[in-house]
Structures are given as C-alpha cells and as structure tokens.
Image (cartoon, rainbow, N blue to C red; front, side, top):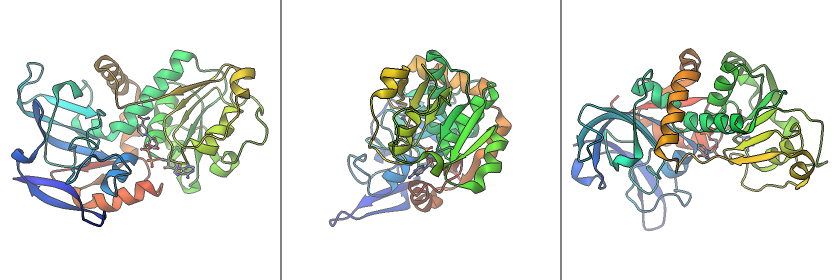
Length: 327
Ligand code: NDP
C-alpha cells in the first residue's frame, strides 16, 4: 500500500480530498508503473482538487497533472525498471489518475525520458507550467520576436515566472505584469527589466490600437488583459496565449490583426507529440538557469495540497510548488 491524495464526491456533489492508502491494483491501466518522486501544483490541479471544474471524469480521483520519477515496471520496450521519466499532459490528473500518489500507472506514449542536465526534482520545478512557458517561447521565436520588450502577464505565477527567466536568459528585455507589487524584487531577480502593474493593462479596450510597445508576449491571463495587449503589440509581433487566469472571454476587435499583422498563437501543452515534448525539455535543460529555477520553488507535501489547490485558484501562489510525494 502507498499514499495518494484521493478526491471523492458525495451524493450532494460536494468534493473532499484526503491523503489515503491505496494499492497498485487500484491504479488505472497502463503499460508503465512509475514510482513517483515529485509532482507540482498547477492551475488545473486547483480545479481537480476541488469540484473538478468539468475536468475530472469520475470519482474517486487522484489529481496531479504532472510527475517525475523512476520506472518500477514496464510492458513497453522503450522503458525498463530504473529509468527516470517525466510526464506532462495527456489529461493525466484529469481523466486518468495522476501524480499525487507514490505510484502512477500510465501509457508509455505519455512519458518522456528525463532530459540530461535535470534531476527529477528540477524537472518538476519546471513542471507543466514551465514546459508550457518553453513552448510559448519557442512559438514566439518561430514567428520572430520584434525589437521591443517581451511582455509576460501573470508573471509571478508558474508559467509567468519560468517564461520570464527563460526570456531574460536568452537576452530579451522582459516586462513583467503583476497584480502583486510585493513580487517586484522576485521578478527582477528572475531577470525582468520592467515591472508593469496589472491595473495599467487590465482594462477593457478603449482604442483598438495604441502605441507599438511590445516585441512579443507570453499571456497567462487572457480576458480583458489579452484584449488590451493585442493593440499594444509592435507591427507583426506575436502573442503566445497560454491561459485564462483572468477570464475566458476576449473583448477584443479584429483591428490589431488587420492593421498591425499581430499573430495570436494558441499554446497547448496537453496533446504535444513526443518529438516536440523532447525538444522543449531539452531546451529547458539548456536555456533555464537552475539558480533562477531554484528561486521559484516552494516545497510541499501531499497533505498541503487541499490548501494549495485553493491558493492557486485565488492567484496567490508565487512561482512553482514542488510536491515531494514521499515526504
Ligand atoms: P498561476 O496561478 O501560478 O499563475 C497565474 C497568474 O495570473 C497569477 O499568479 C497572477 O499573477 C495572475 N492572475 C491571477 N488571476 C488574475 C486576474 N483575475 N487578473 C489578472 N491576472 C491574474 O497559474 P499557472 O501559471 O500555472 O497557469 C496560468 C494559466 O495558464 C492558467 O489559466 C492555466 O490553466 C493555464 N495553463 C495552460 C496551459 C496550456 O497548455 N495552455 C498549461 C499550463 C497552464 P500576478 O499575481 O503576477 O498578477
């Protein structure tokens, strides 16, 4: 038997989460059984620890949308016991039991080998949020980053923190948007050259085009903030749209696309093919300074998760929470 954070739903639809002992026979089907070492707390985990937000298919449920650990048993030739592996995406932690347990059983196709240069804890300090930040930077690079600073919204959160550190390390000027002025020192420590207050940008579009200010943008917030940012982009610049922490609506006009050739690039970390996942992880091992990554980390255990799930939904988590499932 081993520990897992199990979420249950009662007859009235109320959910509760508790650390519970389960057995290997309880795990869902899959070719590879992994002794999980670390998982993390992402926005989707907050939803899945709570009422599910439409993500959880059936209860009882073990959340945790990412994990890193060591293969314990494998029916697939690509993996053998002792191999270090990482998992993000594929609706693990949503439709399939995830990383908030000391063991997980998954399809071999969903895993990637731990990239050289990262240990399992560092891989989860990166986690889904950092992996998505890297995909965003790669998408911006593919479309060309212009001369102005690159704007990162939701900068003190998980995606924002890693995006800030990667972009700064690559030599770009980074303007970090935050609603928490107390995180300014943290963000400049990650390499941000400019701090922008959330309220300076987070308002409904007044004019569809403003000054050409940003050479690119990684947007974790969506909603009114994304709509406003579109009209502030340089000619031909791109916005990597990652998240909706500030809302799913988009009260924008088509003018920035028509008159400034702005590109809106949708970023999805869940269904990335194996080669893309490997490429993004290799870039992370190379382009993300480990001392910056360490500065983002807040350690946690399985029993901390119910509170941390609520905190991340309230926009109160700074950087990346790394869960040591064996602590
Ligand atoms: P976090 O909660 O760590 O970060 C989100 C940040 O957004 C907060 O820290 C806060 O930053 C800011 N924020 C929160 N609420 C608001 C608001 N109402 N208005 C403006 N800003 C707000 O989450 P993650 O970084 O893990 O994820 C960010 C988003 O990206 C989520 O929507 C998540 O679901 C999505 N996501 C998408 C992925 C994909 O594949 N497309 C993968 C991973 C995440 P600050 O305090 O600095 O203002």
